[in-house]
Length: 253
Image 1 (cartoon, rainbow, N blue to C red):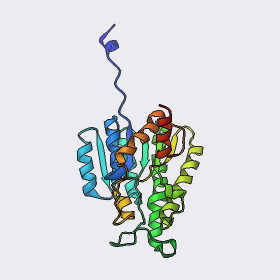
Image 2: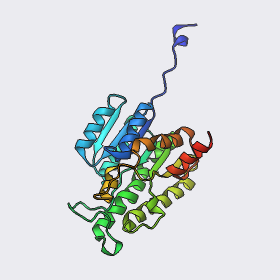
Image 3: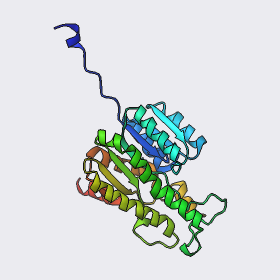
Image 4: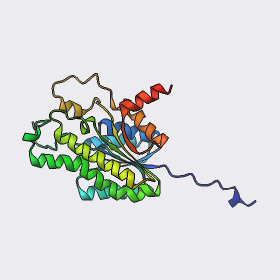
């Protein structure tokens, strides 16, 4: 045998995940867990300072590209897609970025009734929570197909339960749920999940519940292992509730 025959094959490159809304809350917790699991990351968030802090921490663990911007912006979505391609192509897309009410004005009503919901803010809510995830998925799909990858869309119980004041947010998440289900039918070689993580101790929940004590809610880090379980098990496409997945795991012990 010559020396060439003794050469070990090159290791497979680390898989690539695109995670939106990754500067805080569930997005950041999931990015940290994926990094620890050996994934390369492309992360995005609107807040440049928060995203830079996340990038600095994650870069100590894995290769990460951080791109601040809004997923509503066409160019930003294109940059995320190109960054993932530059790392070898995405195997996972996490559509986590979201908005409670689309409002940018300080002091805006956190959960306006539908009768009073400013239409520009309602449009922004649907763009961030439903339209932009679909648009980003369209761009990343060729990479996901090449890697038999997965799409994880973060949903909410407000998508199926008519809570007072949650009409705009819930309707946008319901739209995302249905798009998830249709994409799963159209892309049977992929895994396409919508997951309701349940209430968590996040900034968004506190914004929705001003003055309330949410310290009893689980941290996002407690939810992440359930999401990773879907990924590791390559669970069938569909809509899942973290609460149900936890119960099933306890029952299987």
